[in-house]
Amino acid sequence: MSRFWSFETRTAFIFLGAVAARAAFHNLTRFTADDAFITFRFAENLAHGFGFVYNQGQHVLGTTTPLFTFLLATLNIAHLPVQVSALAVSLLAAGTTAVLLYRMALRLRFTRFALLAPLAYILWPRSLAAETCGMEAALFTAFIVAAFFFQMRQQGFYALGCATLATMTRPEGAWLLVLVLAANVYLDRDRWLSLSIVPLLVLVPWFVFSWLYFGSPMPHAVTAKLALYSQFGSGSWWSRLVFIMGWRNPAGWIATPLAIYGAVWLYRKQNWGRLALLWLGGMMLFYTISHTRLFFWYLTPLHP
Image 1: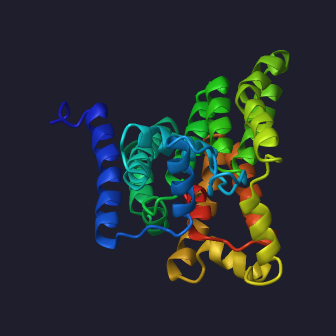
Image 2: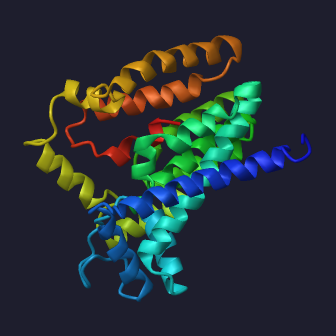
């Protein structure tokens, strides 16, 4: 029995559990977010040779997820429909996230409770919805969790690589990249240049391309939403905080003290969590005080 329930078997069950839960949810709801079709169109035009554009001939960066767009375009060249590709990438990313959470829980000596970490993620309602709606949420979450996983293992270059890919998946990934780079430079000041090269090799070419092709590396979708929702629709800072914390539901009030207790326990007993708390606090502060409307898929990476 113990041989059957080996580490490899548990890992496989966790991966397949995350995939199956999301596949079943998508099969029941058939929900695809409106914003996803913007990325789908960019990917299709890129795959068909029309360029990185929404409308042919108009060089406007209307998507905030260049890496996800490139992935969908590549799969579309292989004759996979972009909507199917988006779901497939998300399912694989979700399975990877669940496995990484389990491995982190084992490393943090959760012992027999280690399965609770991936199980909570697999069944978390916001994650189920956000990671099956065609958006980049699952991929972004996977890169973030992977960055913390490798940082925990003191594999700084891998952590920086994942943080860089997170930045290419969503602009908010830049905060994680800054923290991971600062942490690794602090731990090994003599290697600051080689550590910095990792993100520079990816981000500098993208920024140069964006300046030349679009006129700016800043996605127009960001500036448009800031202009629109700064006038109306963003709500007060308190309403955004309530939405972030899930306090409109009794489960949010239960989860909040449990999360605080867990953070204190990790810090005191395991001497881990400072970097994660800095990242989480910064993201929550940014979303709370920003003047843009919060969509539920923005918050998915905060939950694991």
